[in-house]
Amino acid sequence: AGNTIQGCIQTDCAINPGNSGGPTFDLGGKVVGVNTAIVTTSGSNAGIGFALPSDKVEPLVTQFIKQDRIQQGQRPKTGFLGLKIVKQPPPQGGSSSNSATTTSPPHNKQWVSAVQKGSPADEAGIQPLEIMEQGGKVKFGDCIVAIGGGKDIESYDDFMAELNNRVAGEVIAITLEDAEGERRVTYVTLGSKP
Image (cartoon, rainbow, N blue to C red; front, side):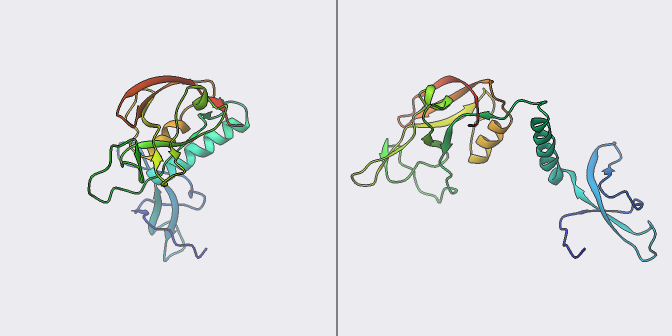
C-alpha cells in the first residue's frame, strides 16, 4: 500500500491470494525468500512475483522466536555480562599507540569501557578503561579477544552476536588482553539482566 520494497527476488512462480508470507524455494528445496507481492495485468496469479530474501528475514524470525519463547517461559533469559565496550570507527590509517596511556584507543581491539558494579564481569575482575583527570588521557584496562573459545571478537557486532546467543546461568570463557598485550582467560557465569 504505497510502501517501497527493495532488494527483492523476482520470480515467475504463481503467487495466489493468501500466499504472501509463504516460502519461496530453490530447486534444492532450500528456502530462499518469503513471498511478498505480485505484479499482474490480469488480476490473477499470473505475473511477476517478488519475495524478500531469506537472509534479510532470518534475523527477524530468530528474534521473534526467541522473544516468544522467553515470554512463554520456554527459554532462559539472554545472559548478562554487565560490561560495555568501546564502539570504534574503522581505522583511518597510520599506526596505533600500544601504550597503556594514550588519548585514543588502539584500533581493532574491543576495549572494555565500563563494568557494572556487582555484575558477572565485575566479579570476574574485568578492568575497564579510565579517563585520567590530568591531561584527558585514557588508561586502558582489558580488551575482549574471544568468547567461549570461538572465533575472535573483531567488532562490537561480533561481541553482541556472541552474547545474544548465551543464556543466564551459562559459564563462558572470555579471553582478555591488557594494554601491555598480556592475555588471560577468565570464566564467567552469566547473570540475568536486572
